[in-house]
Image (cartoon, rainbow, N blue to C red; front, top):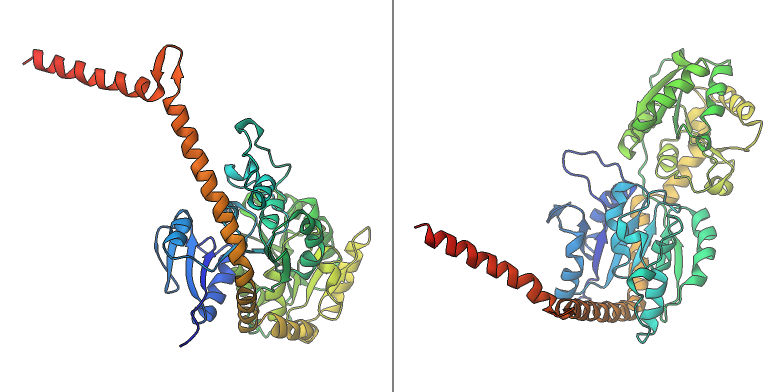
Length: 444
C-alpha cells in the first residue's frame, strides 16, 4: 500500500480574481502548488471565502483550526511578508506551530491588533510547563517593534528566501526558542523563477534601457542613481517603478535632478509587471541601503532574464559575487560607481554580462528544484512537529477551558445586592417585552 500523503495546511494571502497578484507569497504559491499537489494533500488557507485555488480546496484562515480538529494536518505552512496583505497569515502563525517562510525579515507593518499584545514568549513557556498561570489582562505586553520576532520565534522551522537572512537572523532568535522536541531549525529556500526570453527591440541606436525599483526614501538611493543617469554620457532611459503613494516625491526628485526626459515613472511593482519590464531592459537597478530590504523576486527575475543587476554591498548584496551582479559600495562615491557601470553596459554586451546570473538562477531558482527542496523539508520536519503540535494543542485547550470558566464567573458574579450578571441583563429585557405586550393588549 502506498504511503499516506502528508496533509499540509498552506497559508498565503490570495488576490481576488479581478486583482493583480502583488504578494510574493501568492507569487511563490502559484508556482509551487501545482508542482507539489501530487506528493502532498494540500488545503489552501487565505482571507477569501471557501472555494478553490489552482484546483485545490481553499478555506478562510478562520476555519483552519476547525479543519484541523476534523481531519488533522501533519503540518502548517505559513508565508510571512510585510504589508497589510500579509496580516491574515501573520495572525495565524501564533495559533499552531509550523513551518514559516519569511519573505521579509523586518516587518514595518504592525499587523493585526492581536499581534500587538500577543504574549508569545509566555505562551512558549506555558507550552512546556502547563502549571504556569495565564497572564492577567492588564499584563499583556505591547510589542516593542514589528521586527518579526514573534513570527520567527513561535515557529519550530523558519525558512528564509535569502541566505544572508537565514545566516544572520537565525542567530538572534534561535536562543529564545525552547521547544522540547526538534529544537529550532532554519533553512534557505530560494524563490522560484523560470527563465525569461529577451524582448528588447533590435535597434542599435536606441537609448540604454535601465529598470529600477525602490522607494523615494533615503535607503532607496534615488538621490544617487538619478544623478548617475543625468551624468551618463551614454544615451539612456530609466523606468523607475515606485509605489503609488510616492508619486509626488518621485516626480519632485526627477525634476530636481533635471532628468525628466530620461525617466518614466511607473506606479505599482508586482512580479508579473517586473517580468514584463525586465525582459525589455539592459540593466536592472535594485539599490537599497537597508540590509533588510526586499530584493526578491525582482533580483531573481532580473537574473532569469540575463539582465545585469546592480545591488549594494549591504544585506543580501554582501553575499552576491561580482561575477553575477554589479555590487556598489555604499558611501560618497556611489554615483561615480553607477556612472562607471552605465558606461560599461551596452546593448550588445548586456545579455552576455548577465549570463552568469542567468546560470545561477537556472541552478538555484528553477521551480521544480525549489519545490523538491521545500517538499524534502516538509517530509523531514513532519515527525518532529507532531509532538510540538500536540503540546501546543494542549495549551490551546487549557486556555479555552480557562476562558469559558472566566466568562461563566463574570456572568454569574453578583453586583452589590443584585443577583448574577446574567439576571441583570436578562430580567430587564423580559420585563420590557412583557410591558410592550401589555400595552399592545390594552390598545385592542
